[in-house]
Figure 1 (cartoon, rainbow, N blue to C red):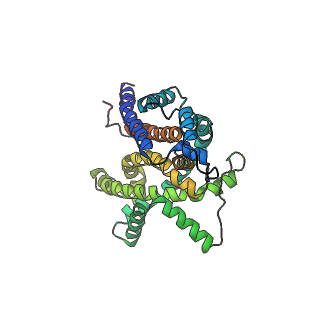
Figure 2 (cartoon, rainbow, N blue to C red):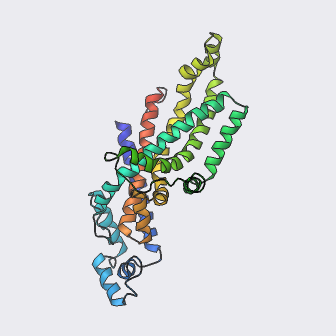
Length: 319
């Protein structure tokens, strides 16, 4: 409990620095949000008058000193009331709660896809070291680590539409309303995100398993006449999975962060799409709150990984 408390306290300075950085970056971006609002999303409002811009800036609190704006926003975040969108006037927290289930489902589905691909690939690559299967698995991983997830997403859409004459359903249907359509809509986005993570996990799985297979207790198990399959599953795999747990835990946070672009490609109304739209509109409080939210996910994911790692490896003790 003491360790958990210390780690939670150590997260506070990190989040404070993140909040300062994102607040400062939003203020140096070109463009006046008040002018953009008066002009309209498509510029249909025409050129805005200087007096109208000044009036709207005052109403939105954008004329206040920056330090006042920062502490007003941070005070709202701490009290779970980060304010309203400058464009829609809707509460940010309400939008976040409405959109996050989709992003979380996509992140979990992508993690499952990555594990289904990565664990068998890593094991086969280690057991068949130096064979064509090993070379293929390593090329698979290198390619996955070299390309961005949005490129994979665009490639998947291009191949399915151009060569398979299949256009995947875009948009989003709640899982509890229509599970089949929900999976059909999310599986391709999950594959785009999961492939990148699978490449990293498979390489870690391979290197970790190769290291374990050289241990003395593995040779002892072989000398007792146990089959290769039994040695790997019963003895080697458990210890080889320890470093993989770290990658998977942090990878889930990375995947959720990666949904920012993927949700836009597949037209999914999640938190990532909300963030992209807010950046384009210079919606300061929305961008600041969402980036802060993603930073919290990363920090808590690191803490959770540490706790799980201790449970899996009794040799490690919490300081």
